[in-house]
Length: 107
View 1 (cartoon, rainbow, N blue to C red):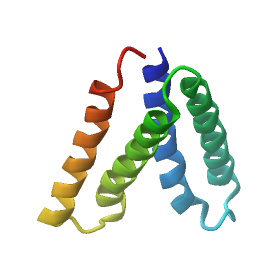
View 2 (cartoon, rainbow, N blue to C red):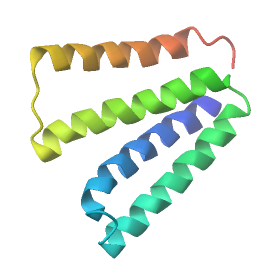
View 3 (cartoon, one colour):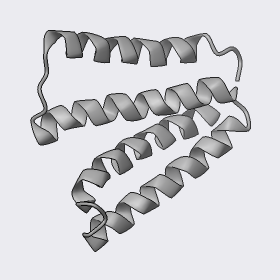
View 4 (spheres, helix red, strand yellow):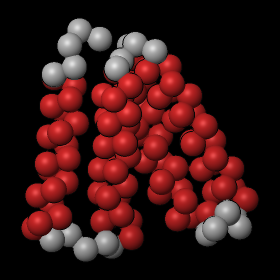
């Protein structure tokens, strides 16, 4: 169950990271409220998952999901550049996230 909560926390991190762009410096009320809500929910779920999972693993996976998701959505939503090197490192990041899950033990 902790891994499911951690993945949801990571997806919410993607939401708030992308949401920051839409808040326009926290000047737009609705995107700001949604972004702050996603930040709070993401942190709460990370905290709950960290009760069971090692904090180093939980935090690394949480940040990794957020970074990977924000980078991929940045490519699609904001037309950020995608180069072969960038694609390689995004795949490497995904591999690292999966590797942490596979080597984390029984938690």
